[in-house]
Length: 74
Image 1: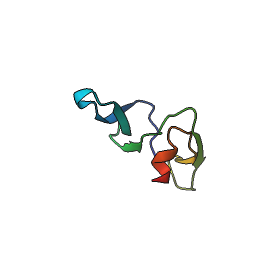
Image 2: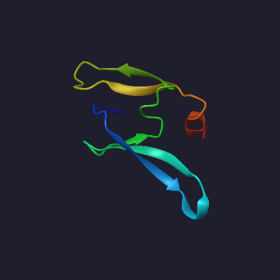
Image 3: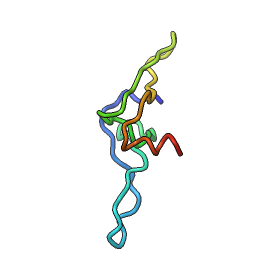
Image 4: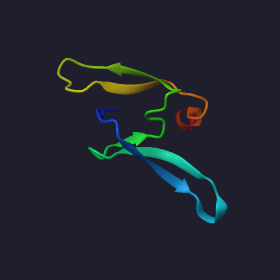
């Protein structure tokens, strides 16, 4: 995943008839890239890799927090 921007908006489902909403993804408001729901989570561990010709490093989820563990285990 590559997105150098900081501003994202959550993509939510649910919330009808009293059901709780669930964030299923995030959307960058600058480049409109679809990002995982755990993007920007301070409790998840992320690492960056960058190949020689990459303008922007790739962010990868190293270890998800307990809240986002179900997103990668499904």
